[in-house]
Image (cartoon, rainbow, N blue to C red; front, side, top):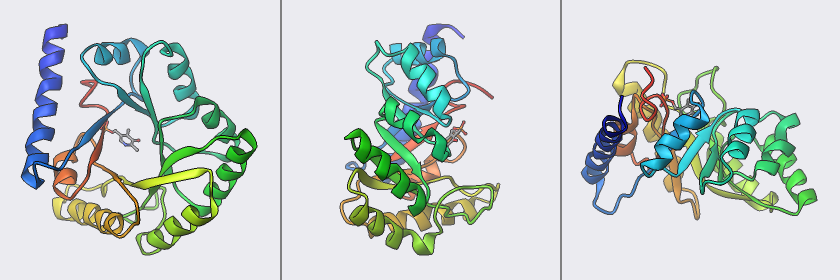
Length: 225
Ligand SMILES: *Cc1c(COP(=O)(O)O)cnc(C)c1O
């Protein structure tokens, strides 16, 4: 694919996001985070050249490496993966724009402690396991609001900005939609929340129609698979 073809490909994705968000409201703004976990720093640079600024990684060591290699570019890094306790200090060192996958009160307490020692804060989203899938991280929907408020009141170095979910893993659109609606309903009940991160390459239009204002697109943005 030439650079022009790649730009047209990205334009077509942006148009799809536009169409979906306008079907909700002209005021409904959606941000695209390009998930670069399958991609090289050269591929990230190519996407940066045509205007993309927000990128997401799901492994702390990959995030560290790519952020370091691309430190001269004004990129915004999102961490979207499972954070093991022994990687907390590495994540703090990278200082991501947004930690999207905070998935338990226990992890929040540990992260908060380390942030305090470092004298820093971190913006984060609470991950909700809205599809009730064992393979997925996140708090159960019925506990979402309570845990969100608990973190907000006890973890002074974590700034919770909203919620994140991965749509149900199925071909049944109704079930995927239900999982998005579950997360969005929680989002609307949270005080001060501004980010509802839902939707990946295969389901982002549905997610936007269910109220998502941040989509995480990997294979589609990098033209893989
Ligand atoms: C990999 C990943 C994505 C992007 O997935 P695609 O289907 O490639 O768009 C989004 N969110 C999370 C949490 C991921 O791990």
